[in-house]
Length: 229
Image (cartoon, rainbow, N blue to C red):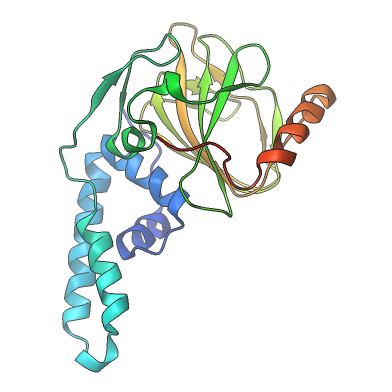
């Protein structure tokens, strides 16, 4: 059962087509799992269309209107396609938006290790201001404790993880803000796969991991360096 959802600002901006690409990807991924949020997006889209229809023709510029309509037309349908894949010893069902970026084969991506049980693969979604990645946590493993310098959005695609705040499952849309510190721990019975986006690098509590991550970030932040499939 999904317990964490995008707030009204995220949903409104998504329906209007004004979210940054990486954040819009996270919302679209959440919508794959969440029927209630799909209904909200539908209602917001209908409301936006109604408001536009009441505007004088001169008040709406053609190019801007066309861009909005194209974004609305690209909203995820209530029933989306999916593909069965086998990434890093995990069988998972990918949402359509993520499937397009990975070509449905996570083993073809470039994965970097963060500690013993965590791997990360950066995705190029065309958002140069944010880093968007897939995060894999082995069952029972944990992401090293870290502090956020900016905001982070995480959507769980497979399995679950917990931290000091709560436990999170597939479809949950989790927002962590600046200066928050946490340590996600995957459940013991299943590997965890997440989609994440950051607007600032994280800071590891462990100095050795912090040093290693700073080297990685020096060559890859803020734009992903590998091709998205």
